[in-house]
Image 1 (cartoon, rainbow, N blue to C red):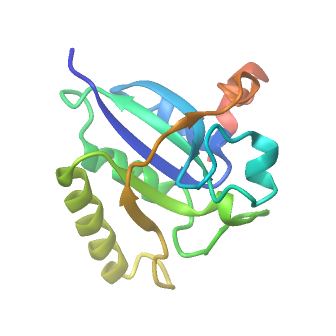
Image 2 (cartoon, rainbow, N blue to C red; image 1 turned 90 degrees about the vertical axis):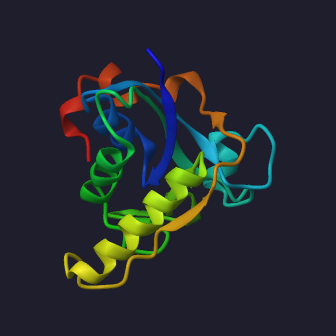
Length: 158
């Protein structure tokens, strides 16, 4: 089996992770940090807004079962991409809506998907999701991995 990677930021990474883990064809999902300027960031550092990192989920998937386009639809359907640096009660740059692409094909698919969705009328305001090349991904601390699952709350995903 050949897998590919996709990286998404859509607010607090706990619910995003649980949502992607429940998606058929996703073989792994790891919460972490990306997009900032600090090497080896910590949760406390990211929450202090000093690192520039977003809370993200790096998804490994089997493209024979789930396509990148389908993962984009999961992403768009499970958060509000029109709120800048905010998802529900979570406010701050670490909660920004972002797609980190891993290939030119992912970049084109993400840009096309965003443009199509933005003109579809599905959302009442413009989409503010960033689309950027995948930077270094830093896995979050162990206690964040499968956080909702460990607490019996995986069904409460976004």
